[in-house]
Length: 372
Image: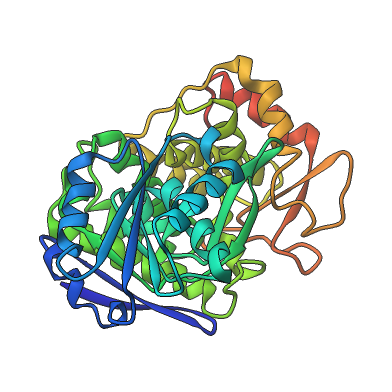
């Protein structure tokens, strides 16, 4: 089992990862102060995994399991309130810990329950997807959706620790592995382009990887994310590099109503952002081609319905990064690259205001399959 310390500003927590390590979770020292553990998982997390986690804990703790409906439409305050009521009903007190078992959506919902109940209960992440293990648990952000957009209601809250059982990652469907690797590709493009050559040799279209390679993916994502968040834990400045591809990505994710995974939408968003950057003279064709080469290397395929154009436009104009720059009726804020590994800085901000005409022209081309 490997252990890495994750530090974002004043916040720090341990990340444990390896294969066949779940039976050792009860020995984690920070659990000693807890009496009860409530496991929260959405209904798409396999029952076998939830039972594994419960069985590994019940010898030492009073445990309860709560399930909720999966899907972005259930990632809201109504679900959080229902789960919070159920946690209280289970007999929770200030020595109760909340364990999020699942992907990024489960982590956000459980994270909101943890940070709100009793003004803060210990939160433990057991990610079961590569997306969660390499991205969403490496953040202080906990958030849920509202009618107008994704992740508009939330809080910053650090976990007690993260515990990743790699055997769960190795059993994922290929699309879920690809989705997680899209965020790794984002980190390569926006933060650590010096590592592209290394990962070009590892990434493969069939997405069959060894335990050691999964550990390498997690190692790299910890390194990349801490490098931009060590002095920016709230992701408002250099940490905004992590939002690369997410403006159009989040808009597509909401518009397609679950047809595409988060990482697939971010891939679409990155290729769109690259084309916007090229239109503005920020990226060369060669740098744009690197985007496509990396995404093709992991075999990600996405072809959204052009009929989604107006809906995607709506969500772009209601993106959760509004306010980082003064609002403008005919412009929208984007994280863009000015060369690989360099977020464009405009007016001392990591957000670039882009004419909507350019954005929507690129979006139309993307939806017609003219990716670059």
